[in-house]
Amino acid sequence: MIKKQVCECGRQIEPDRQALDLPLCAACAKKNPKNILNDIRETQSPSTLRSLSLTGVTVLSSGLNADDPNLPLNKAFPISPHPITKGFTIPVHDHGFVRYIDHMGTDLDIVEAARVSYQGGSKGPEADKKLLRYLFKHRHTSPFEMVKLKLNIKLPIFVMRQYIRHRMQNVNEVSARYSELPEEFFVPKTWRRQDTKNKQGSVYDADGNWTPVLGLYDGEANDTASSAVGQFYRNAYNLYKGLLEAGIAREQARIVLPVGIYTECYVCWDMNNLLKYFTLRDDPHAQGEHQDYAQAVKQIARVLFPWTMEAYDSIKWKVEEA
View 1: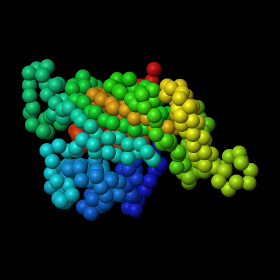
View 2: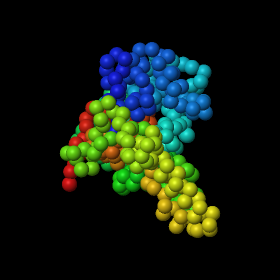
View 3: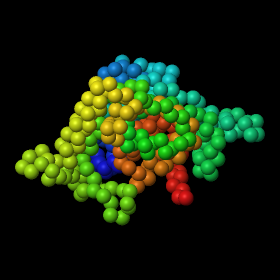
View 4: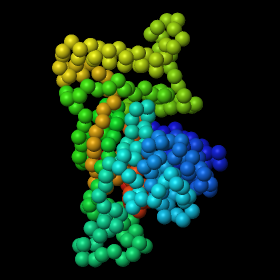
C-alpha cells in the first residue's frame, strides 16, 4: 500500500514513481532532463547505472516515451539494441528487489498473433496499437499469452505466500533444505492499524507514521513494535544457527524462521496472466507490501510492452469476484 505523496507542483506523484521513492511527478521530471538523470542516480547503484541503456531511463521516469527525441543523451547511458539489459534491478524495501532477466516478444507479436486468424500482418503502428487496445478492452486474451517476461525476485516469505497464489506462472524458489538462509528480515518502516471494515485489510494513521509502543519491557525507551520485532528476528536466527551448528538438518532447522525472512525466486509470466496479476494487486484492498513489488514489476513491463501497459492504464479490468 503506497501512501499518497505530493509533488512540489501540487500534483499527486504517480504510484510507480512513489514505489521508487522519486520526489517529483512525471510531468515535473519531464520538464527538466536533469531531473530524469537525478531520478536514476538516486535510486540505482553504480553498477546498475553502467548497465542502463538510453531507453532504460523510461523505467525510472513514468510517463516518458522511450522514442522521445528530447530524452538526454549521456555517456553513462549508451544506446543499446535492447531497452534494458539482463540484471537491471529495482530495489524494493530493505533487502528485496525485482530484477529483469529476459523476455520474449513485443507488443507487435501480440498484434500479429491476433491477425493470424485471417492471415494478416502488421498494418502500421497506428492500426496495430488500435487493435491491441481493442483486444485488451474486449478481453481477447490469448494473443497476450504469446509474449513472456522472466524475473528474479527477492521478497519476504509472507509476501511470497501471496505471490504464489497467482498460479498461472512458472516459479522456482530458493530451497532452505539445500541452502542456509541469510540473516535478512523485513521490518516495516511504519505500521498500519487493522481496518475495522475489512477483516483482511489495514489503514494508515492520519500522519502515516505510526510507531506503537508495546509495553513489553517496562521503562525501556526503545520498547516499540519495530525494536521488538528486530529482537525477535535476531533471537530466531540465533536459534536457527545453533540448530545447524548442532548438526540438525537444514530441513528441520528452518522451522524456527519467521515469515519475515527473505526468500528468492525466478518467475516467468505470459502477459495475459501478468495483467491479471496487476489488476488484483492494484486493488486498494491488496496488502501494501505486495503492492510495492507489483509496482516494480510494472516499471519493467512498461519499457518492454509500452502499448500493452498503456492499454492497461487507460482501460481497467474489473476485479472479478467468485
